[in-house]
Length: 397
Image 1 (spheres, one colour):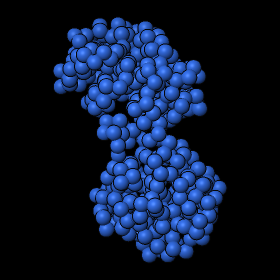
Image 2: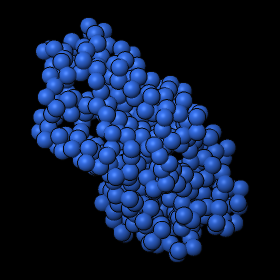
Image 3: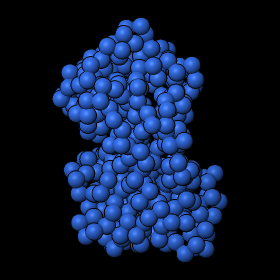
Image 4: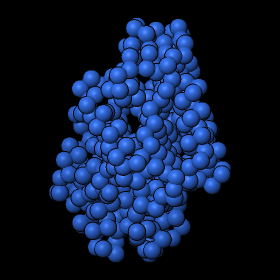
């Protein structure tokens, strides 16, 4: 994989596709700068190598063109603080002012372009729009793993306008791809995948892909109840995809046929209402009373899952074990996170991916105690499912 380390940026303009789709509060302040911090080393390295930098990104999902709420001007000060560089701003990514500013950039200078999605052509993968964007730089750098699964103009189309020796990956992309490759193609056994979240339908492909690679698959979250009901359990008013019961049975049978240990929770923390202050108690997961719902895994499952995790050499975690945003139902997710940190300390390689799993690792201040925290949820899943991504193929091709 060709990274910025193998190119000469002296007196060159590097057009970098970053993923600065960060959350803003009502005062338009950045509330989580993880993605900007992740891209900072790429930006700093290019500046140190005598280049200038033009940054392009999207923010949110603007429906009707330019909207103040989704303007990247709100993040200029944060980007400047985290990169240590003065950041100029162009209020239209393909306007005359933007081209004048990018053409005049001197080594060591940084320009941030306005939200790419203010143009519908970005998401449509429009070739003419991609060609216009390409005029901003001499070298194209894709460092936006979080959007690499989208065949958008700035991620999968633009690369064709740069010569083979003038396009590469930034450190975020390189780190993500190397980490996923280590888990999927070079996993040391036992390899344990922890898959949580609300719906089986969202995770079918990843579970099926992991069947051929993982030794253990631990199921958690709302999706567990579809498996429980499929096996004849009574789940009260727990979340369940009734149209996926047969699929759940098929996945259980496939796992058995392949010799994969597919773990379903045995007990749950149940509540009479979807609220932090609801009445709660523990229950066998197969006999949840009418009017009650499972919102977290309970002690027996936590003990089993923790033991499997601590005995693993490779770990992939995607999806929480319960409604961890509520303190009454966070223990399962927290204990799994702690078990992963413990396994990592014992020498396991651990990859955390998917928005909720990343949020949990950060909530419990464990990011520094796992091997790698992925910045791209959907991109991570699709990479595992498909074996590559449009944004990766565009640069490598």
